[in-house]
Image (tube, rainbow, N blue to C red):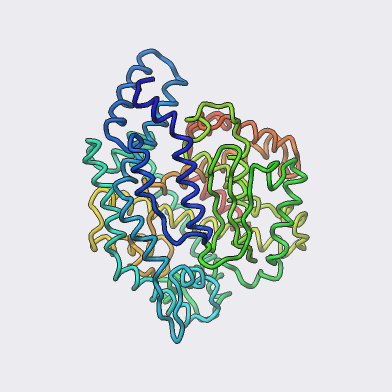
Length: 506
């Protein structure tokens, strides 16, 4: 391998370990700052356009020699370098955003709350009037402080210039192989095919939350109303906080897995100020140090988040240490998100809910439909986000994008969003595409598991072994190839939506 890429490969593991540690400490409430600038300065070759040029040259040579493994490894390094060029340019704005959100105090009635507290309280606040105040406080804060968020998005456009690409979507398509225009068409088709079922159940859950609530266009439901309805508070007695983790542990045990993966997964469930309200995984070392950060809470949505992040952790903890560093550490993010979604979609199984949470038949049936609605809402939200974020990556973060963001979310979800979130509700590197492809792949993986191991595959250790066999490949697979391998046909996003609609229509 050419000398610049050899340097990247040699230092890649340490760089990613330090980066994950920074994000762990910040998200776990152990450090208010996120000092990524110093990290990029310590590893300059990982964010150098010269390294990207060297990767282009090495990739061309490997393709000429017909070396598939070498091609895959260089492709992964090339994507990493393109990402880190952008992240290095975005480091100062990212630090500014982290500091701003950590230090901000937002007035809500007679209280002064942190930004994180406001976001965490919105979906769990039972009083509609107070939810409105919380949403308005967060949205107005983001609008008034949109400068550093816009600077972060501008970094993507600067990366385009540094790497000589046509525009940002073209750059990300070049390094990931994701056909964004085709995926956007699939997203629009998914929105069309799922609209009727979504609107029917939306009206039901809003009315369940508040008999006077109605969706748009005839009603006045806001995004915070949908967030509260997705918590399904009427189901909370069946999803108690103290039952969630033990249920997951029992299930993993029957599947031949353990929550700690023989010490490779380190669980942080300690309560502390500033800790992220939703669970997340920080991959420090693969496979030996995977940190699963939890803030234990009750509810159907919380159990889904726990299962999702446990899926991420189990995947990373079962990647062989002997793989080349690129295949061990990098990969198609759609694939790891699909594995996590396989775990999360267990909530679509009445049998799983009955067995591990002891739910009676009727509550289990209702929980499955609500879990399907939660998943469909997230799917539709991300389908709308894709077209918006492609526009954002092409046209830049001007205030004109706020109306575009709000229009897309309003048309997909039939509730009124706050336009102030237009630069906050964005993942870097068009990661929204990875989520969409992941849900399409999860549909195929779960179908294959069901075909091979029956509908209760989740209690068959042979199914877990099959999945661990996929985990052991590391980053060798891309989502399209894996979908074709397990099902014989390419990814098809509308299928993911149709599967959820079928559950809602039972």
